Image (tube, rainbow, N blue to C red; front, side, top):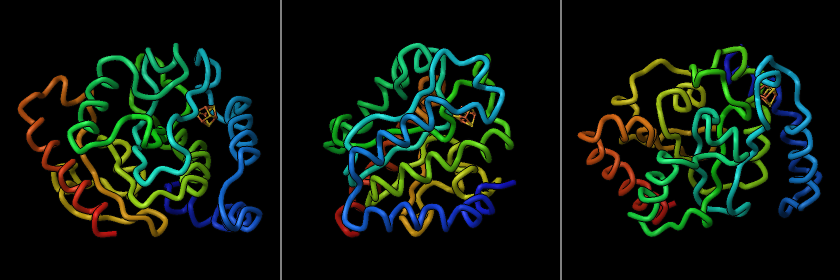
Length: 209
Ligand code: SF4
């Protein structure tokens, strides 16, 4: 099942989530969702995780960063984007005046795939409702997907990341931009300039929406 189909099937659930909290999310909503994730055994990744990696940051952020899945350090620490990739993400955000603590950061998958393999379609389908609920609770002005896997999952496409960059997309009626994953940029430093352009677009977009 792709994410678009899943989004449709879960629309009522997301709607009722909002209706219970018409003005803003409460700490109860977050606690409930966090507990749901921590106890999740919907896919086999629960058998190999050290812990779930829920998400971190400002729960009323204007900008929400979405990656693909926890890696080794994230699985150990229980926080997304730590280690060298996390440091680079922090620097990317800093280049447009955002401290890490001012944005909300989450992954499509909440558990680490063994050996950092790519997430499987069925894992994304089973896990994506958690991310959708996080997005519904944060209600960011702008989403930034980092990396091919996150972009493809959110947009239900196989279009290359190079073609997805530089364009304003939508996910659940929220504007969405795409850039490279920091781990990719650590291996392909020649593309850092393009990532910087993407971050500039993030900054400009936030000024206009
Ligand atoms: Fe549940 Fe997602 Fe972890 Fe799979 S990856 S066990 S669906 S929280």
